[in-house]
Image 1 (tube, rainbow, N blue to C red):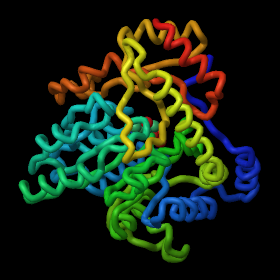
Image 2: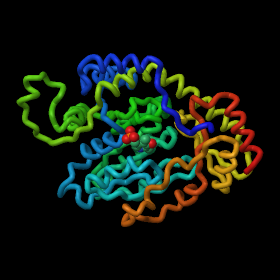
Image 3: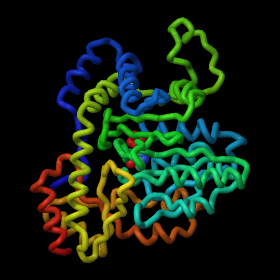
Image 4: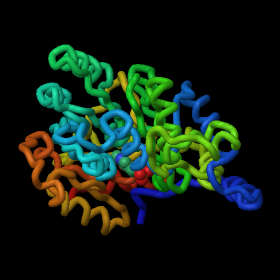
Length: 374
Ligand SMILES: *Cc1c(COP(=O)(O)O)cnc(C)c1O
């Protein structure tokens, strides 16, 4: 079976991990510092904090920008997309905030910015967006929408970008994660850049960055020297969300090889966009020339999705909707609302293998099977 996902681990990761295991220091130490320095170089900002998952990173970001949980968060809303992994949305519940679902643009599967604009009110504490499959939300247009709402309500809500799919994506030449918002990347096992499990929070200013670095470790300032560390007062409590040196060693190895893998995802996606154009019962997602997707997954919209998935499975090819709309889970029943854009795509969307493990023969076979019909 050609799989939808595989973990990518560079050849020298095992040696690097062994060196950590032999060092007698497994916690957040020199390898995390080295990984963060490499990430800072890569992303062009040192306002960042690694964490033990993107879920933790999203929780931390929301805590920094809309929390902490308590009287101030009661009744507060977070505008968010229902089309994502639940990791985007359950931190909203954990902080005692209310998710308010924003519709999805059927052309991109990203948040619908027109519906978003209509739903921003004085109760809006934050806005969460996801770059589906790595295809960037129009962050320039989003900034205008939020600025406008800020003038109207007297309060400009902060934006958190869930960049879990978007390592290597860019919009109008600028990398995703560098648009003045708080951005959270995932280094989970099947993401473009993996540390086994891990994540990264990129902060828009130094004050938030210092807070993030303290609150990821119970509110203690780990960047300070040892003698201060053991005697310091915690002024603001935090979480145990930091990354460790074992994970950072894997990340350092994979950072050297991630670009080539993302390029292969992109080449495969370009092949599909060309070969699947005009196939009856199948629609491609929007791909505009002003943005580059990291093409972490390749989603198409099909008629008779069950038949499509069955036909591909018979041919040894995995296909799946990947994510289930979050708004229909029973734990968020009270927040249900009409979402016609999402209704139009929720039963049609399906992802086909696009990753670095899909070679030229595989992708030719995949397009042949699809073009033959289901
Ligand atoms: C994978 C993923 C996450 C969670 O990442 P973890 O690092 O596993 O916590 C969050 N959001 C989206 C959209 C994801 O795909």
